[in-house]
Image 1 (spheres, rainbow, N blue to C red):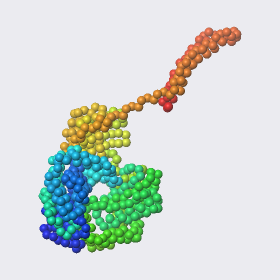
Image 2: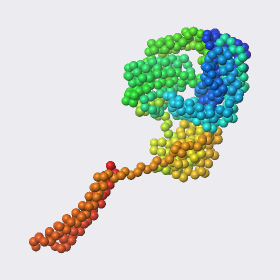
Image 3: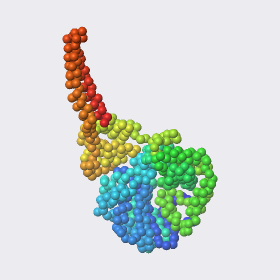
Image 4: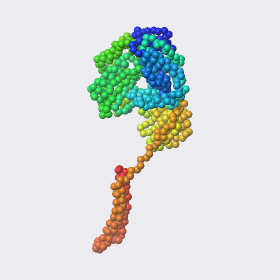
Length: 580
């Protein structure tokens, strides 16, 4: 059914037993469930709404809003995702009221004395969380904006001010941009969720860094990740389940290449979803795993989909409707659809859609998944499978002043009025100032620029010849101020320095002896040997006497031979030293 975007003023209950009402201007859904109360307050704001220069601001608001809850026994949590922020609580009605009232009160008056501390906590949290298999794909697909921010750390934290945080909370954490859900048949007494008034914010428009799909890019050894974006649908959800079964059967059970081979379907925003397929392998088996993975997709794209597989995944999906207290179980997903303004199906409508999906429908989804696929592949690429290589370097470089690298004869930095390029053997990256998502400015003079397409250029004065303060000032004036983040001083050990030339290897002992022997025995040996020969010839019988002119010529030739042989031996010795 379609979503009514106007907030209702009275209670209404749908066919599944979910009640919709309004609390302090916030759309609210309720459904009874036995046991303690559970509630969630959702806001339609997340990481994808930020820029790279402000990335981390939503997470920062979430942390500040929860600070005052401290170390109590209340079971609560907060989460910042790409398109939403969720404050969640489980306990007695009094617990729920205290928690939600406290969150809303804190959003009105965030504890800014905690700002720097919470920034450090967020950086520590990020350092310990690592990166998932889909994060690199987000950067390659979307670049450094919208959903591509999932591929980056929260790089904007250093530049976010208290005024920035207050403004973000005031405009994004509003009653009109929120949905509340509670597992009860009534709103707990005393609930006061007074929030600023504002407007609902639609999910951001997705950006793209891919000139074409399907495409591939190189990844770490041992893991293959496929992502594909397509319209949200029941058929796409079932297809992901069928794909997971096929991958598990072919790559683990039959081939023995993978420990994990799976696929999943995840809503991305109001209208789109992402299908993710993943498989791992040992380095010596990864080529076979990649081949088998592509074969599975080719089989499904050819329409070779088993009816039994469709029936199996459909039965599992239908079984989810047999849960006790189904209305309460549906609440979080129902609230999320309200938040995103996505049509929410009743149980009867959802079952009918599941029953209507055919093998032909899955075949169409398989073709759509492949057409939009972006594959992170280990080892060799996937050109042989008909995929294009995603751009690994910029298509062009700027003109302007040339700054050779100090230690690398092949490295070059070019600074122009409209952009900067970094050139090295096998790599070419350009950032146009008008298309810059972030520039980090360091007190030591470095400038790190990230373009909308995700390419990065590091202007490091210590690594390139003749970068002047005037040229750095030209960059600063050209880059939009809204994307500049001023960084704290770096530790001296973190400032890059040109590589030191390797010291020459000490000559081997045998080479020293070889040279000494050559000089000690070579020239004296030639002189003595030549003298003996001349004396012998001189005292021979007259019939064998050598003429005096001939003797002088012979002695001269011997000296010349020594003068040639000794340097030749020295050069030969030096070549031997170079190989040692």
